[in-house]
Image 1 (tube, helix red, strand yellow):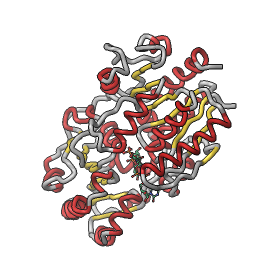
Image 2 (tube, helix red, strand yellow):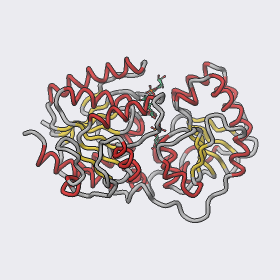
Image 3 (cartoon, helix red, strand yellow):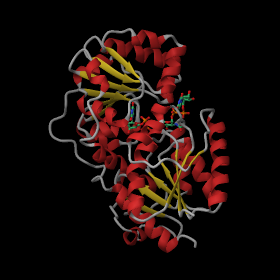
Image 4 (cartoon, helix red, strand yellow):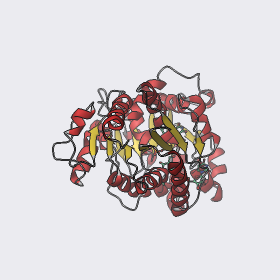
Length: 386
Ligand code: UD1
Ligand code: UDP
């Protein structure tokens, strides 16, 4: 029987789970990896298993797409079955997707404690599905593994961490000092996404898209949030703005399946594909996408992870949102919030010069996975019910 059951299901979770699974293995922790099947296209799921050091999942719940309630319910039912059969001592979840919240809920309702990676992030907007998912998950988790000091402060403000908790802690002993009560432990461990980037450095071959760009300078665009894609006027407006930008700068656009479906339904996919200066491609494999972020003159995105990666790779970023969970990226102007409907994307790009100096590294040292594995090991050895 595995002591730890991990649930993943969406693209960024496969990427974060790769260094984490490796660190758990190195720490001697037997992990049962379960894929909920929330993302299922090969370029959103399978490709990451093949490219990264992520073991194949022991099980796939195959939940697929649906409304939030449908997905949450299906994941909970599937997770419950597995947890009843396998009885792990701890369940590990990542981030803020429906898979995160549903697996965490299924676990605590069976009396199994939860460890939450990327705990403490907040957009302070309850109308974002991700904010609901992360708040619920944090409030029911036992191990709150935070990527930044700001995340710990957010937990402190919600009474989930004691005052003065925003310090790094590398071992369970230090973490114990951060226990507000016997049921919760909070640690600032750094961001596992940096571990993934460090692993990716120097790997991968020349990306296929590179030879298809017309100009040397290009912008990299990603879009998938409900705020950008679900409102017809907003999406149509963004398409106009992107086409306008492509007159000055090539735009590499790996299209998330959600966005592709919306663009297609509005007849906008063909328009984009037929625009000179636009390079519309399928979602890219991770190593190829990291190369794109490194080489781009600018990144334009509504993604959480991509804002942070652009910052870590020292590429300026324009974020198509009014707020960000990753406020550290705003320092020095590396990331700018331009809203879901910027008045002129072309002007925003023209104005955004690369900031002088290096981006600082508030996201840790690339060893978050080792730190988290050590904390989980100590928890399993000392605290978990045997
Ligand atoms: C989900 C997460 C979001 C995360 C993102 C990462 C939730 C509520 N949202 O958003 O936090 O940032 O993953 O990419 O959990 N689809 C496919 N093939 C796939 C996957 C999705 O065609 O392999 C299409 C379907 O039409 C589906 C739509 O994309 O209805 C949305 O998928 P879903 O998983 O619900 O949300 P994402 O937008 O991917
Ligand atoms: N990503 C990728 N290929 C792409 C687009 C993104 O591998 O075509 C990676 C990216 O490097 C980052 C993660 O996917 O690690 C971000 O996922 P996404 O934007 O889907 O979700 P979010 O971070 O907003 O939850």
